[in-house]
Image (cartoon, rainbow, N blue to C red; front, side):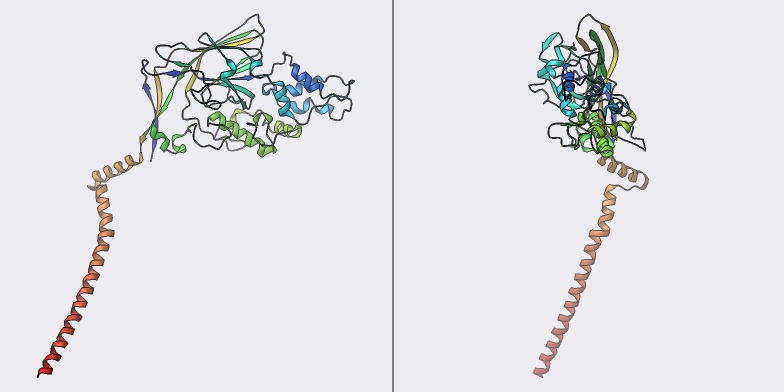
Length: 427
């Protein structure tokens, strides 16, 4: 039986290279911010000039488009009172993906400037869009969106010769930044490495450390249930390009929504070819009442026996990212910023390796037999050989000898009769 262990090994800072983690950025809703595009959408709901602007519908739409503004029970609370109203703006009952696309900022609207180690780079060339539970987000150096070390991959490798690692991001709107592994995606339930830049003038600093993990080649030969992890390039039947724990949880939540309410939240439409049923107003009420819009993190506990359970393995290439410090201040400006700094190169890393293979089990059994019985694996083979091949050969040989003896006896009798007959003729 195979056995997997994780050990710690030292790194050589003169040769080993450390890569800066992937970064995810998602626009967040901010109640103190004015959304001109949303106001234009609501103005379009008016059927005549006498209808007044409905701020309750605006609040409903904000909670629909920006997941961080959602609170349990808010779907009906803003819309129920206008259900039978004929001369007022009502909440829309469908078309939510279209409204979300119209209101949420694109890359050029969201980013002001990006710098790696003080050098400016094109934000929208390297931050690529992806759909998540938080809506449309942008990922830097993610294998979910671009090819590693390709044209849209920003080289952020550090070594003894260039140990500095600082990423400065400036935003024009309220955002949340995620520090994550290259195969991960932002998720509303994974908040450990999530950092909000909400009010205008906010400037944050995040100090991190990274401890990498390496896998021996033979680890892939072991089943997932034994190694307790999944490689990103393994076939896992997801709509994302690569597997990760956050991808698995996203797919799990989407499956639960469809199973329970026969539709999913529009944020979970993963790509243009996704034909999953999208929730209208009644579907959102169903998700709201069953606590599936923003469920508790207990759905990720595999030992739960009731309700929604997401039994997901971590990624085999998932590095350990730790936050060792945070600072923030308010500046007199309209934008927001976050500085993410790697505090020194790692001196150690984890290694996942096979401790005992199948051949090791055979050798162990042979050793035990030799110690206690004087036998060996070769003795076992000889034992099997003696009662199968050798025994069969012996039986076949005996049968052939009996047949040969019988044939010889019949031939001798025939010769005797012929000789007797010849003697009688001459007499």
